[in-house]
Image (cartoon, rainbow, N blue to C red; front, side, top):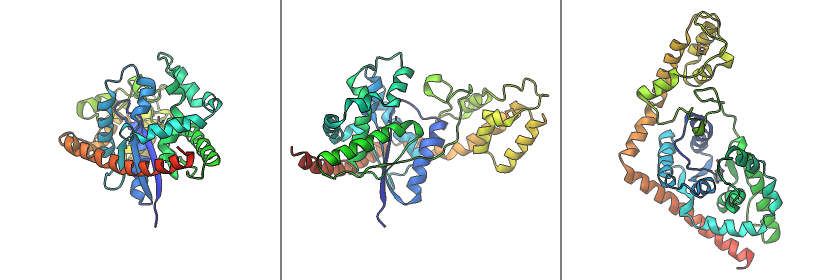
Length: 329
Ligand code: TRP
Ligand code: SF4
């Protein structure tokens, strides 16, 4: 059976956290292991430049570390192609050609553009590159003639724009590109330890790499049911982030007991969190083991990336030959 190709990417803006692990990454690993897809996953380091252009020191290290996080989480270079965007120069050529046919109005009305600009108000994002972010993303996707793009809801406008750009190219020149589908999956909503959205910029994240004392400390400082002031108060697990984590990490029976005991004040938050910390540490152990393996074998990482880049390049070259013929250049 011919496998359908899927492609997705992440910007290398820093260490990945448990929100990423149970969101995008779990999804990627699941698609990889389902056997039904030819998976391409890449580090979107040029995309990182759109917001980090004035402090690019960390991008290179973040790129390598992100691949280590991916492998630790279960991506398998024997099954998936892992590569780095900036190594495949064809992306920039396709980006340039697509930028010629993308109406400005499509970019200016992109909701993600407006949101990100507002969210990152401390940065000057009034640049050509930042406005063109989705055009580069479209190039990433259609370069590999991907059938599907596994993403979170926040990326839907970008995939929608990609679809429009692909259709426009096909209409203006030649039917080269399949119009890609977004592949959405529901993900558990994990909040940071302070109860806000888990985000690197809030410094409230539990990272995939956190372990030992550090992990315990973070779990012990997690916000719980805000109404539960004393141990003798009954709690409400429904509105407790610790409980959301238990549902992911603890056995169903344990979760059931915590639910009941919390409601009748038969378990305290400190104990509840201690149990959670133990569960998370247990679940993360094999991930940390793989992480240590790769950290001690950086040569292997370099080879994996090189191999992935090679595979990606082959396809990108072929696509660009077709593209050049179609646009007659
Ligand atoms: N914009 C995506 C994000 O911020 C990253 C990305 C770049 C991407 N190119 C892509 C995702 C192509 C999917 C497909 O998460
Ligand atoms: Fe949350 Fe557990 Fe405390 Fe209940 S006992 S409020 S579930 S931390």
